Length: 251
Ligand SMILES: NC(=O)c1ccc[n+]([C@@H]2O[C@H](COP(=O)([O-])OP(=O)(O)OC[C@H]3O[C@@H](n4cnc5c(N)ncnc54)[C@H](O)[C@@H]3O)[C@@H](O)[C@H]2O)c1
Image (cartoon, rainbow, N blue to C red; front, side, top):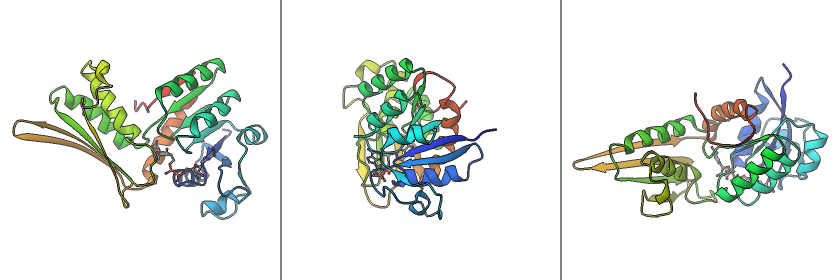
């Protein structure tokens, strides 16, 4: 089988570097290009601590997509840059997997329309950790029985968006389960508390309370490798549909 050529956008960042190392050891994918605004011109292998790869960090996404014959792009850049990057990929009919968080629903709709127009796909996954996806499913189940619930999400201080995409998705999932999505804009309806501290990676507790008892569903990503199996799953799903999907399907 021909290995698919993947471009990593944001390759010099924390997630981008971990993802590049993962792709270099993957049987089904080839790390074919890295795009970033820092470390431009450096050997990508040196950037990720892997020795030489003969791939230079590039800054011009459009040029890379055509010159390196990319099959799939993955974005781990910033909330301010991801939509433009994804739009460039879609305009080139290249399916794009988005791990970057903080995309508004309006921007997601714009990307959906573009993906449909270009007959390709965009998959937005706010959290690739499989345990976090299970946490969201368990929270949906619990809220049917315990409706007093709050979310605490905790991340490293460099995280740009607040609250986290996972916390928002957890909350919307529970409101959906209660047929209360129309109340999603009411802030005190399932409050989200955000903590940003050094030492943290990505953690979330969903705490339910009732008379004389509490139930806590907690997930911890202890390092960035925790996101890689979910990225493998997402890459398989990415080319199976046209348009936009949000979140990973585990079955
Ligand atoms: N979906 C998930 O499971 C998951 C997990 C962890 C982090 N994230 C998200 O991934 C994103 C990246 O996180 P991080 O910790 O790696 O951040 P980071 O700041 O370490 O890396 C971001 C990288 O993007 C680069 N960049 C900025 N503008 C760019 C542009 N126009 N084109 C290309 N690259 C550009 C930066 O130079 C940097 O190297 C954040 O939104 C974060 O919330 C998602």
